[in-house]
Length: 318
Image (cartoon, rainbow, N blue to C red; front, side, top):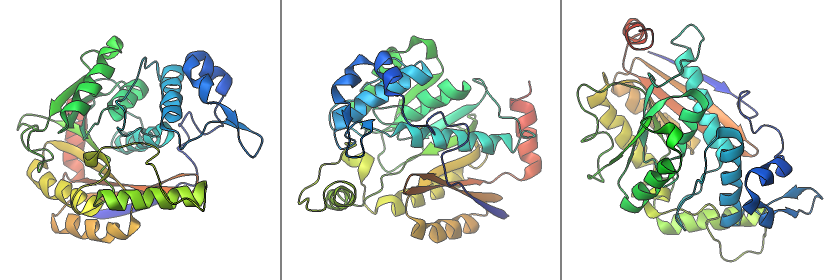
């Protein structure tokens, strides 16, 4: 088994959002955004990123202008994902697949992905399909999120058939009940709940508010929204990813690569220990940086190199 790590100081080179936002073009794509544009204390035009409606409007404009995704929306108080960071995830795992394909990123709906907890935004399937034409199965155990994600697909008929949404009826399961023995997925995506409780999530939001906006703040609002299953679960990120790793052992031949975001670097040694115990063939840790925020992609595969080559030849080169 081998482990490699790489550190990137900026967004992925292929990320369309490395440059400052062009608000003139964004407003032309999504006029609703104009109501939220203001000049900040540095004399530059921007939005208040602590205003959920402003962030939703920005997302709608980004998705429409750059990805041909129309009328995207989420219900009030659901998690509003930061587009640049989500796009980075897509590009880094595309590089991961390219490493199995002589450096060429495989495109088209032959690449099949599984998104754990796709949420109301359905953001990874939408972006992955827009960027590379990949197909997706998105899972969620929240009925309201599921319906909202369905509506986002309905508003974008150009992706009909490329994205399938499934309800996970067992809140304690990740892949069980949804992945069948015959199924083959080239990638799994996962953006796990970060906090272990609502109180911890609120403390985190307050700390962020004080650091970035108002050091005298006494109360905080989760500026990107979020339901309990999106932001916190018992044991937080630690326990959720532990379950993903444990379940992955039962589906080792169904997936080429498993991947998940990891926010807390202190958790990595534990995850790597469990993966070693599970006898994965290879694991990789990829660091991603957006401004002051650093996150990590933990990737692992049970398949030895020769079996991965058979996978590529039989699935991607028909």
